[in-house]
Image 1 (cartoon, chains in turn yellow, orange):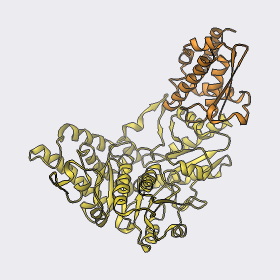
Image 2: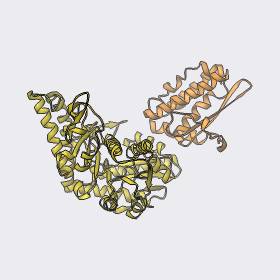
Image 3: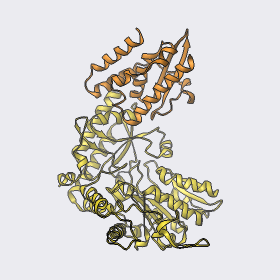
Image 4: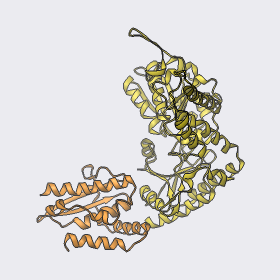
Length: 405
Length: 136
């Protein structure tokens, strides 16, 4: 079964330095199945026309592909309406949109914005810039000793001046599923809306934005097998209607005159300029693939075998410190340090063995400082990875450590 | 040993190893045997910019010749800088400034590093050249 899935990913049969590629950098970007690359090519070759405005046939085909995808994303997230699904260039662009538009409407001097210490720079710097612009204060929510975000700690950070809380569903470093539903409910008790960075979360968890009750949820297409340059912002209609547009021009207007411009209704209000219409519809086969993996018991068994095996090997090794150790909320994403061996050296040696892992700060410098490290090594698995690959990774890691220490 | 002879020796040492993993092992050994670098010298101004790991380089001009010392928190990078300073320490600034550092390409070092690491190597070479040009 897994063989069948792997055969849909040409990248997985690549050889590097004469060895089979073992791709364990999925948290940075996932590989793409043929269904996505073929759709991408078809969109470019056969369905290329600018969407929405023109009356000709091809424009209709392109518009349909684009808008059908919006409906598919809506269903994937279980959003209430298509107006709540905004296409962006990625999670970063989506966070920037909210930080700007929400910030313009609701954040003023002396107000507070809360982010967690474990955020990716993309869910941190836009808020920091907002606070600088508005003379507001950025407050930091800490993690506990296992890397978990706690409701009690969050409640202490909230005040009457808190305007929004931005947290990740799953940290790209810690690989733990945060209790988003509970965290959101704490915030809502205080009347504070929540943005959830789902860049990793949407890949590993079934997301129901209505059940989570979050106010905004963002993710990138390329991490969930779709084309690069695609992304999604989900926002509750009430918020998206209440805040001003982020960028202007193109499709997002109602009427334009030199005296006054009115804006298009949702979702076009937030989709200024020419949209990435050759790429956005690749989200359809990509999300189909993600859903199929979730419903495939063989894939799920392999994933949980990988999780148990790698977790136990890393946690039991006295040379290794694993970060994000809450076992029951762990996903197969492992960041760790090795005593006496630099993460960059390890990554370089693993690379020569055909194993692609990430080393460094992983766009989370404040978290690295919080953990007291200059960087970490990260292995992140996808549904197309096998237990055999996990075993090879552990064997190579051991060899690399022995070379260095 | 002249600069040319020294470079030739490095090229020969490297050619003993076919596999890049073995070459890394060799660089690791070089890194481990590099003379200790005083903690007090690990200052911001001695950091080579453009490297992903931290690399410090210090130089001293004695009797018209440049002597380098260095350190890094990553051992392979330390091996690489160790190789460079082993070749260029004790040379005159004129000799270093006039050199094309071509032996680095001859041993395939730059090509076999990841782009970020290769940029680091370029930065190391640039820094050594700058020191030599300012020392003339």
